[in-house]
Length: 147
Image 1 (tube, rainbow, N blue to C red):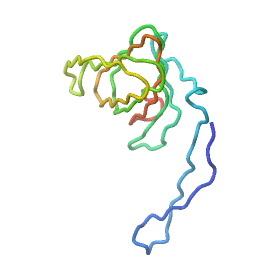
Image 2: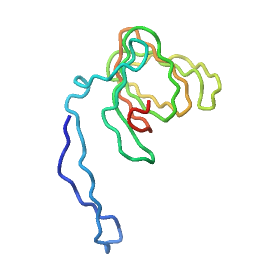
Image 3: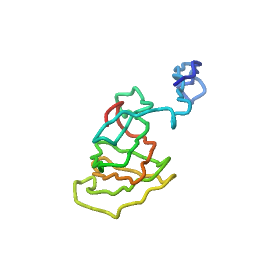
Image 4: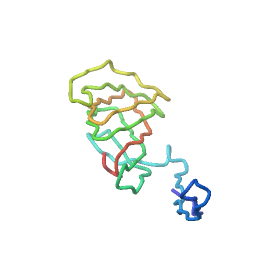
């Protein structure tokens, strides 16, 4: 993992008169993260999730990383935050069991394939399954390790 060390000053006003500025922290990167980053086991014997990056904000934090599901038990997850996910490799069968209000919805299962993108609202209960295994990238409105 690496980061760019150059900091940039950005004007804090758009009126053209203010000279004050704020320092923007350097951006971060993780070379070859899709193949090199190994998320830790979070559930059962086959569900792995790990934050690669997180903001340090206390208000509206954001975290992003990888979710890997290997063949085996399904994972049923209740979202306590909004999240977006894109399937990068493999397959996943994804279905929503409850909506954000807690009402049963049991919608049709989606046979997710590479490139498919999802939005899971706070409060949704979602089931994840896989036949061959799958890897997804996610971005969630939560603090680091808050999944």
